Every structure is written in C-alpha cells, then in structure tokens.
Image (tube, rainbow, N blue to C red):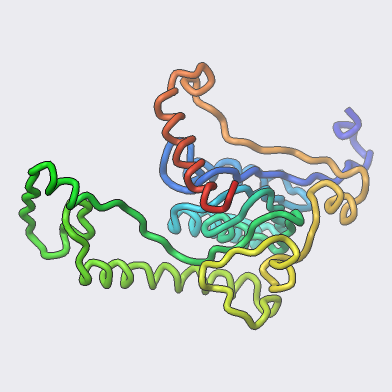
Amino acid sequence: MIRFIPFIKKPPVVAVIRLAGTIGTGRNALNDEGLAPLIEKAFRMKPVAVVLVINSPGGSAVQSSLIAARVRRLAEEKGIKVYAFVEDVAASGGYWLACAADEIWVDASSLVGSIGVIFASFGFPELMARQGVERRVVTAGKSKSLADPFLPQKPEDIDRLRAIQQPIHDAFIAHVRARRGTRLKDADLFNADIWVGAQAADLGLVDGIGHLVPKMKSLFGDKVRFVALGQRRSLLNRFGLNLAQDAMSTLEERAALAQFGL
C-alpha cells in the first residue's frame, strides 16, 4: 500500500516481458500483433528498465524484425534501457529479439547465435514413383512450383531459394552489427554457429553471465519491484478446447528446440 501514499518514495519498477517459444504467425507463436499490447504497456509504466526474458529457438524473420523494431522505437522514445536475459536458448530469431536490448545476459549453459536463414522440406518423388502416382502440375509463371516436394529437386530451385535467403541473412547481420557494434570480436559470427554462455560473451554476442533478479538488484537496489507482463489466453485455451492445435504447436516447438539438443 505504501506505493499509493503521496510523498513517499516509490520503489523502482522493472517491467518484465517473457518471450518464450517459436516466433511466427501461429496462434501460440510469438508475433508482433500478440506482443504489441504487452510491449506498449511495459514502456507506459515508466519503469527504470524493461527486461526481455528470452527462451526461443527462432522462427519468422519478419516477426522477429517487427517485434525488435517495436522494442527499439519505444526504448528510444521513452529513454528507457532494455535488458535481455537468455534462458535455455536465443537462437536465430530468438537472438534477433535479444539484440533489441541494450545489454544481453545469459546463463553459463545458454545457447546463443545461429545467425543464419534456413529453408527445410521433404521430398517424395521416389515414393510416389513406387506407388505408381504421377504428379501433374500446370503453372502460369515458371517459379510457381518452386521446391515442389513431389518432384525431383532442381538446381535452379536451389539457386532461387538461396537468392531469397541472402537478403534476409544480410538484414539479420546488419541488425546484429548495428546493435552489438564494437562489442563484436573479429570472428566468423554469421555462419549460423551457436555458442554457449561464456563463449558468446568472449565473442561479444552477449555482455556476460548474469541472472535477472541479482543483476537488476545490483543496478537498481534491493527494493526494486518486478512487474511481469504476459499474454492473455483465450477462453478456449483456458478450458483446453484447442487440444489439437495446441498439440501441433507443441510438436513444432519441440522440433525447433531439438536441433539445439533441448
């Protein structure tokens, strides 16, 4: 109740936004539309700092960029410093989000990096041939059936996909360079490798080993107050009425984390 009494100094407030899961446009994924109200609210609170708690293997480059851009715009408008704390992983789009912060802190076992772009699919032409199934495709535009999984892979498709990926990779690299600046060491950091805790700190990808509560208390005092902001769940989610979609989202997230051994 003290914080509501006038003339009494209020404890400093840190707004904490949790960014956990894959990044994309799916119902349970992290995306700009879903996170915008939380991010806007965090900065309206006039906290001493905004904290991003990140645990994400990545996902959509566009959604990563939109979320990060929103955080940076508000941070600069309000003059509020942003800190990121990485849990298990901040890889690919997860690291894109982390770079929206002014400082990035990790656990000694956190996985960080994967600054790259991936396209993955399956191919079934031999299976279809064994089953006597013929694939018939008619297009207007020679690239309309790009990377068709039911047709043999073509060199021109690979070249086209790489041509699409390169500008996205370039944008990712530019974002990391702009945000990390001279802290980055001279090393091959942009080949999609991942690093653990102190390794990432040595390379300048993060600022060091540190956890949320002790780090914030060391900066703003023991009386600092943490306000956690989370996305609201729909009534269907609360009562478990979206079990099929939730199961699919969980499988997709588990597959994304599995590549990092998590």
